[in-house]
Length: 321
Image 1 (cartoon, rainbow, N blue to C red):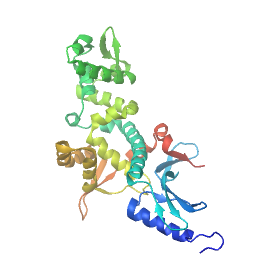
Image 2: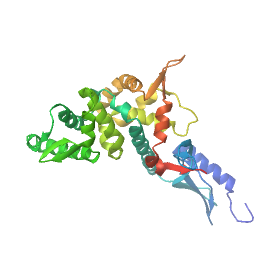
Image 3: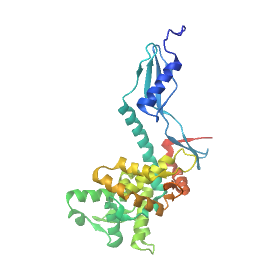
Image 4: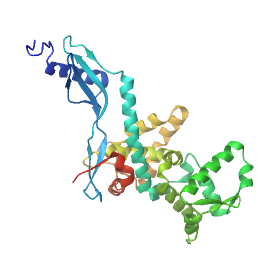
């Protein structure tokens, strides 16, 4: 017994109990923070450290990525007399971890799409999962304005869907409503003035949409589907690493399993090799075929350009002098 406090359990023993609970009942993603010694118990905050981008003093360029700014997601308490351990329910911890990871993943996806818009626009359009935006732009490129009557001839659900996407395209100056019809706005007019083919015009329009429409990341995910999930997962995982990590097909396959279900999951997993080849073809990933199983690494220019998306990364960034 500690004669100064009357405690049967020392702080060293309490930390050991808390560490065992963390290791065997919770997992190794959270870590124990500094102990708070209360009258009858030891309280250990459960902390998670997510990636933070480190910029130079002038915020001119990213210089590093570190794990910092610990966030508390719960606590483990150890009774100072009995040694009994209390912890949050596992689902509460997992839910909070998922929430915080999702916040960072969303930022990375936005920054990746904006910084590599041209590369994403070069992906084969038939693979895209959701195409109303492509339909609208293609119609304007080939046939010209879309009348309100053409939209009204669709089902009410489809009409509203296309109108919603027209509004999104209007926000980035690609289209506008004029005299009860949808027509090209300034950016698309400039694109169409270039002596290029319709596919090249469409690629340029999509590149502009990806670059300027990052706030519509949900819509962009629908368009890019597994290509964004796979590349976004890689560059999220690369944050905080001293160099580009090698990622095997198994980890990419896990991304398909996490994000799809049922027959759609089986189909996406079957198509995984093609997705990886396509991502390499447009310069978002590169493969390595050494002595072991094939693996993929990121591209330095993609990572560098992603980290330069200062306004998007600001919520997860820190500045060092």
